[in-house]
Length: 219
Image (cartoon, rainbow, N blue to C red; front, side, top):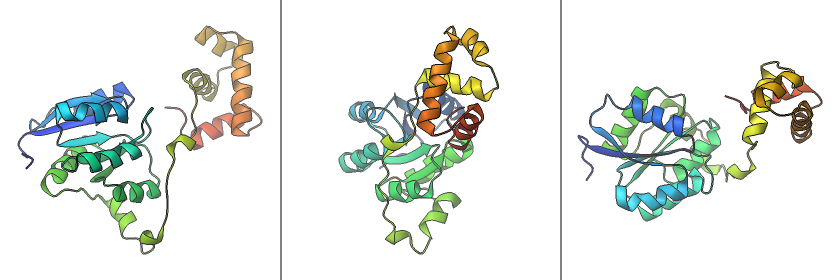
């Protein structure tokens, strides 16, 4: 049985800065101890036998093995461990699907640290954590009839260089200015912009900006 006075937690997220931020935000709660970090689902599954966490905070979009498949594997292989999804995906269909897969809770990355702490405590005590966001999904009349098998590989993926160019375009820098900031030629900048416009189905820089904002492609 899990000890609420000493909860061992693991976190899986491919953004190291985010992981460190979550760990730092939990320091005031002395009964919560982070015993492991992982960059992806595969690494997480490999480290579980050694670290033996009680609770796992797991992102959805990760390389190698995403959070959906990872959650399924954990609930099958390590049924005593509670998985709390901590993600940027606010789509209600993901919530329902992940709860069906065995997740004990679903939080957005904008969640306040006090709620993350409460979620961890609740899943240890009761086996699950239901906040208003999750409740909204679960009480919908037609929820049980919905079929949704999300495939995160179909989400929009851009390289780090493309993201940097896109970010600077959104900040209204010209190709020449971006060239200087990134130490690449203006021709390369234009080629990246053209490639992004073709991929996103837009015709100019304004279209790129609107597309990036709508799909949250930049930080």
